[in-house]
Amino acid sequence: MAENDLTPRSAPFFGMAGIAFAMIFGCVGAAYGTAKAGIGISGVGTFRSDLIMKSLIPVVMSGIIAVYALVIAVLIAGDMAPPPGENYSLFRGFMHLASGLSVGATGLAAGYAIGIVGDSGVRAYMQQSRIFVGMVLILIFGEVLGLYGLIVALILNTKSRG
Image (tube, rainbow, N blue to C red; front, side, top):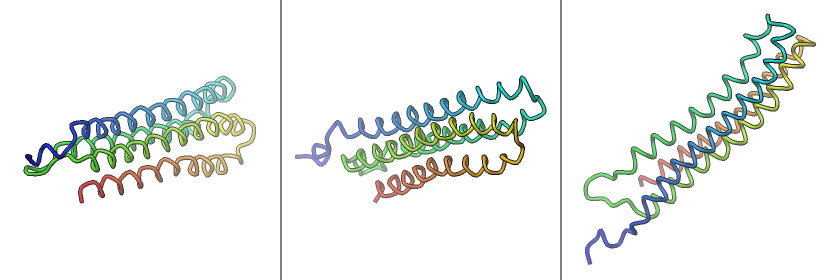
């Protein structure tokens, strides 16, 4: 039996699923955060247009979540073609799936958190400017959820090579 026969043909499916889960969930989280915070910014803009630029922070932070997902998707895609003489193993496929799910699920959660905090935060900032620092700190705590997922995904992607 040839060595290629030992690797299941379904193994690349799991790697591609990891790419899909990273991009789908990460971008859904980023889109939700952008849309939800954008609603709050629109409300602020009708009353205090001078606060719009400072109120864009949640939208920028939501966009970063999609960048995390894109980074992992590109790394997984680059790993899909193993070096000559190696097979794309089922282990590698599952590690890529776990990597994509890690960054995707945390990106979804972070985008949701950023959207809700961004919407309420910019509305509160319109009424009381001292709330700005607290809003940014809470947004950072929401963003770091996505960063944790990125770190775990990078570790899993590195382990899939060894």
